[in-house]
Amino acid sequence: DPGLAAGGADGARIAAARAAAMAGGGTDRDPAGVDPAGEDPAARDRFLGQARQWLEAELAQRLIRTDRNDPDACAPLLAELRAWQMDPELANLREPAELHLPVTDNRGRCAAFWDSVRAAVERFAPPEPASSESDGPARP
Image (cartoon, rainbow, N blue to C red):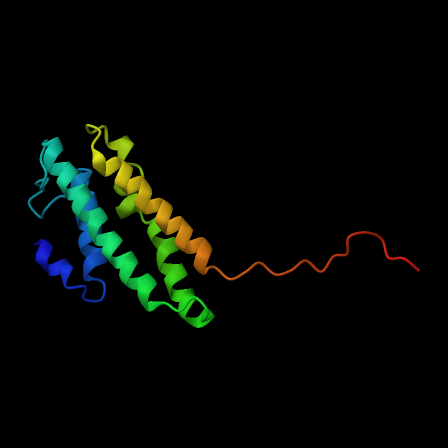
């Protein structure tokens, strides 16, 4: 039910996005072994689109709540975003071309979403420590 995830309860939107992404890729089965999208490419595309929208909403909410200048606040956000980048249940959103579905606006939107995740990771990551090596040999 799309309305359940829209409320943004802790973890609900992410869990719903994972389930929708898996359904969109045909990798989700109900307890009876039935694929919710069946062989319908339009249904798979709708599932993938819904998953992406939930992740976009979650990302936006997390970015608003996180103070970029507070390393203690950034650490959980970075951990979560990096987990999304590796999450096998979100793979259908990261690599929609692998699903061999007709090309839709969702492919471009999925790519743009993952670009925004990468940009957020870069923006919220702690700065690299300055190198302590000198530029050349010490002079007497």
